[in-house]
Length: 146
Image (tube, rainbow, N blue to C red; front, top):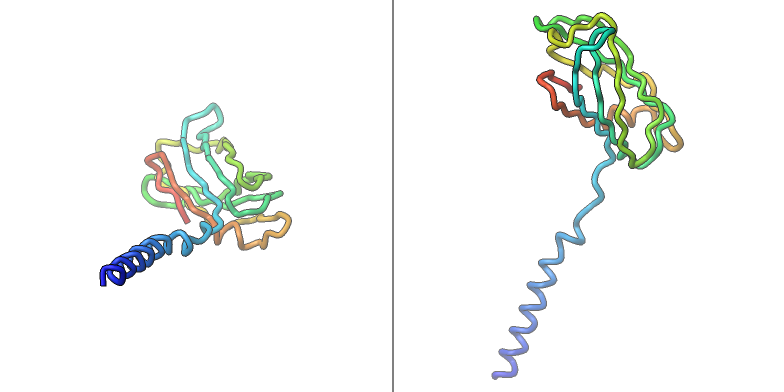
């Protein structure tokens, strides 16, 4: 009887440990993403300088990535539409890019909206991948997103 009890305990322990391993088996790779952070907005000689930090985690190199953005003023009115060209974005790489927006006043900028991807090209990359995988964040007081 003692032998049967010991065997049962061993079997139960083994089963419990195997269940603990299930989450490791069930983990899937993170979804492909293009992480775009509005990192800073600073006055410049030309107007307003927007600094972005972008990380290409789509799993493929982008030879060209450009986005049409809408700038909203403090009243929530669209001030302008413009295209920001991030150029090439190597897979797995983080890149910092600055854009000077002539005549824009950073202090009156309340929101930056990604309207669309005007270009999204690379080997094995479908054109919709840039918008579908886009994840936005901001370190500024300016709302930023899609």
